[in-house]
Length: 186
Figure 1 (cartoon, rainbow, N blue to C red):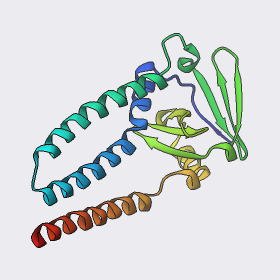
Figure 2: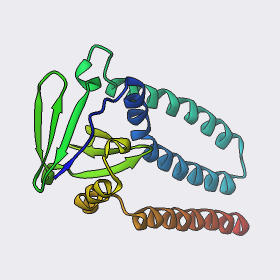
Figure 3: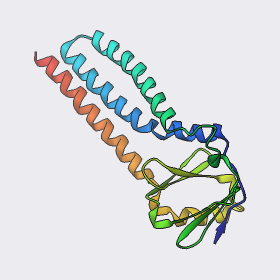
Figure 4: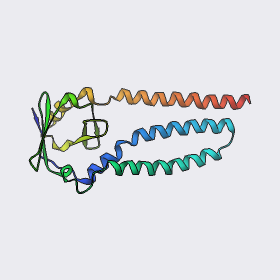
C-alpha cells in the first residue's frame, strides 16, 4: 500500500494545470495549419494572406483557449477542490479522504491515463477530469517509483512523442517540397 502525506492544492495551482491541459493539442493543430498555409503561400507566391491569417488565428486561438479554460475552471465557491486530502493506493483501488469527511474509492482500472505536469501527477478519471497529486506528497522516493510502476501502462511514452515529431517533419517536408516543386513547374 502506498500512502501519501496530507496535502492541499491551491486554486492557482489547479488553474495552471487546467490551463496547460489542452495546450499541446492546440499547438500541434496550429503548427500543421501554419505549414499548410506556408505551402499554399509558396504555390500562390503571395505571403500577405499567410501573415494575416496567422495573426488572426493566433488572436482567435488565444481567445478560444481562454474561454475553454474558464469553462472548465472551478470557482472559488467550489471549496471541495481545495480541501486538504489524504490519498492511498492499494493493488486495486485508490482512496481519497478529504478534510470534510467525504471519501472516494476509484478502481485503478477506471483510470484511462496518467501524466506528469510540472510538480504534479494527474490521474484522469475521464478525458477531462483528473485527480492532481503533488510529487512532494510522496513519503519517499521508493513510494513514488512504486506509484509510477502501478500506472506505467497509463503514462504517455516518450516514443509516442518522438513519433508525433517525426510525422510532423515528414508531413511538413512533403507539403513544402511539393509546394516548391509545383512553383518551379509553373
